Structure formats: C-alpha cells, structure tokens
Length: 446
Ligand SMILES: *[C@@H]1O[C@H](CO)[C@@H](O)[C@H](O)[C@H]1NC(C)=O
Ligand SMILES: *[C@@H]1O[C@H](CO)[C@@H](O)[C@H](O)[C@H]1NC(C)=O
Ligand SMILES: *[C@@H]1O[C@H](CO)[C@@H](O)[C@H](O)[C@H]1NC(C)=O
Image 1 (cartoon, rainbow, N blue to C red):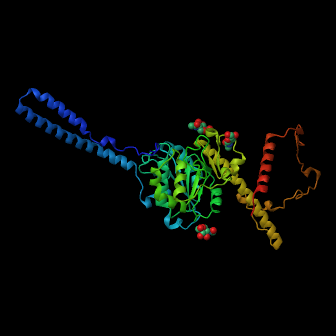
Image 2 (cartoon, rainbow, N blue to C red; image 1 turned 30 degrees about the horizontal axis):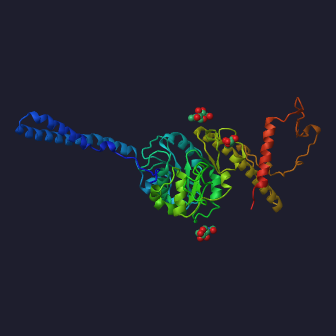
Image 3 (cartoon, protein in one colour; image 1 turned 135 degrees about the horizontal axis):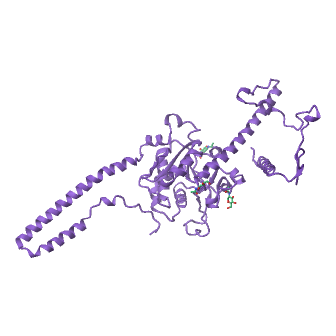
C-alpha cells in the first residue's frame, strides 16, 4: 500500500463511551462479593450491576447534555458555507450583474492558507493585489479557522491545516467547481506568499482561449533528489505550486468530479505533483511546456531572503507573479514598488496620448484641445510639444540651458567640482533609462 496515502484524522473521540472499563468494574465487584451468601451474592450482584448500568446511562446522558451546548457553540462559531448564495456573498459576487461582465468574471483566485496566517499573509494579500483582480478571490483554510480580519474566507469541511496540504488543495478545486465554475473563465490556485500583478495577468489570460482545457504554470519534473521518486514518466510533468497554477474552466470541470479518486491514489507527498497527476489523468492536459513561464511566473530560490533586498531587477519587472514573500510586511513593500511602476507607465501612456492628440489636431487643422486646468494644478498641454532638442530657443545668454556631460566622469558646470565621479543618482537614472529603452526594443509589438 502507498505509505503516503492521506487519512482523515478521527473526529469526536471524546464522545465515544468506553464500555471496556465498565465491564472490568463489574467483574472486580462480583469478585468482592464472594464472601457473602449465595442469595445475597446474586441479588447484590444484580443490584450493583443495575446500579452501575443506570449510573452509566445517567453519566452518559449528563455528559451528553453538558457537551451539547459546547458543540452547538463551536458549530455556530464555525459556519460552513455549502449554499451557493452564501459562497457568492462571501466573495462579494453579484450574480445578477457580474456574470456577464468580463471585467469581473475573468478569473477566480483560490488562495490556500492556514489558520495561523489569516491575520498576516491573507490580510496582506487581500489588501494589496487581491482587490485589483479582474474577478474574485477567496481564502481557503481549515474547517476550524477563526479570524477577526475582514477577508473572504472559506472554511473547507473536513480539512485541517496539516502539511502537505493535499486534501486542502483538492477540496478547494472541488469547491471552486461546485460553486463558481459557471461564473468564471479561469481558476487560479495560489499560495498565501505570492504576489500577483493583476493587470499583467489579465492581459496574459485574455490571449488564451478559455474554452479549451489549459493547465498553466511553471512545469516541473522534481529536483534531483526527487527525480524518480515522484512516479512520473519521462514525458510527464506537473505545474509547480509556488508561483501559481491556472486552470481553465474546462480543466476544472473535468477534474473536480474525480478529486476523491485522486485523493485516494496519492503517489507522493507533494501536493502540486498530485494535482498535476490528477489533471493529466482526467483533463488529459500536461502543464504548459514553456521556457518563458519561469520568468512570467517567477520563483526566487533565496527562500526567506527573496524580495527583501533591492527590487529594481529585471526579473521583478518582467514577472506576472512573484514567489515567495515569506514576511507579509514585505508584500506591502513589494506592492508599493509595483504601484510605483504602474504609475510610471501610466504617465508614459498619458504623454503618448497628449502627443498623439496634439499631432492629429494639427494635421486636421483643428485647435489643440485645452487640457490644462490650473485651478486643479493640472498642466498637460505642454506635454504635446514635439520631442526635439531645439524646441526652445534662448533669447539671451543667461537663458541658455547647459547640459551635463556624463562618460566615465561627469562634467557639470555650476558645481563646485565640475569634473567628478557620476553620482549614485545619475548612475541609477542612467541604468533605468537604458533598461527601459532595452525593454521597448525587445518588446514584440504586433
Ligand atoms: C476556442 O476553442 C474552442 C474549442 O476548441 C473553439 O471552438 C473556438 O473556436 C476557439 N475560439 C477561438 C477564438 O479561437
Ligand atoms: C533572487 O535570488 C538571487 C539569488 O538567490 C538574489 O541575488 C536576488 O536578489 C533575489 N531577487 C530578489 C528580487 O529578491
Ligand atoms: C518582517 O519584516 C519587517 C520589516 O523588515 C520586520 O520588522 C519584521 O520583524 C519581520 N517579521 C518577521 C517575522 O521576520
């Protein structure tokens, strides 16, 4: 038999009475009664046994009564949502409006988390990228999870926070299929230590035909020690769980009816390997074999150190998902950095639009529209000026703009030391410009 096979932990052990103990008690009592007369012994024995029997029933009844209110209480503390409307309410999905709104139903993200991370990682995820998705997000945790934090939390029935989270993962797939399959095109399984760039993910997913069965992720075959121990054939792979795994609706619907089978036939302790096996068996798709995936779904192997240092790196700029961010404080830091990038690219887009507007207006012989609004501090019209080094002509010598010259040394008139080493600000600025230009050159424009 497979030693890793999942076994559900026994539930409600305290409530099971123990008849064995009682039988022992009876025997020792009847042994004591040996010194009395025959008649006495029999009636005494009868009396004693009846007494014990009644006592047992009474105790059991009292225990039952005493335990019952507790049980009710704990059940009330832990509502399990099986009803679809409850599920929609938790994730904030309005079935009458959102179902046919592709900005709101492209993607559903299921984040696997545990009770101890609800107040930290889950909260951080929900407060950063979780709210910007072209769809909805929910956090899947154990049946007994509790939190005061306001997050869309789904407690999976019969699931605990043990590791590896195979049962949690499969039950999440089942839950997503049963409750949300009709309303979203793609379903993502994410960890709670991941950062997702929703705008980039949306662009990517919109280029994929969601009617087909897809299993999108960073394909893996196990590392060197695991190789050969995962029961994978040469041409078989799985999607590595960490940086995120995305299924199309079709994949989800083909896999979900069989999750119990898959849970009964585990071949390894790796949750992502088993999900991969299940998807391959029932949806008949492998994980996407694509070299690019390792930069799109980026996993940094420095463990707890990842994303705690400088973020201005090509990998961070290019990725759609970033993993792992073990300390949730750093998720906020990463978020603010990424927001900065987004603001910069929005600014660039704005300049581009204003230039386009000015140019087309001039070509059409129309006046350039007034975009400035001084009372709100908005000045946009000057952005439409042609990009040229001679756009402004000085009238007098004082007005002449001077340029800094930067090569190995920087030459700056006006500074106390006109020839000096380029400052760190200059170096970084130049590196930024070079990277941006390289990105523009390398971007595959259709
Ligand atoms: C998407 O895939 C489905 C099923 O294979 C196919 O019928 C449909 O034409 C595809 N749509 C596009 C836009 O390619
Ligand atoms: C990723 O890992 C490498 C080496 O392990 C490290 O040098 C780099 O700074 C890390 N990147 C981020 C963004 O943390
Ligand atoms: C997480 O990072 C913050 C900021 O660097 C630090 O203050 C905090 O101690 C870290 N928490 C843990 C658990 O390492």
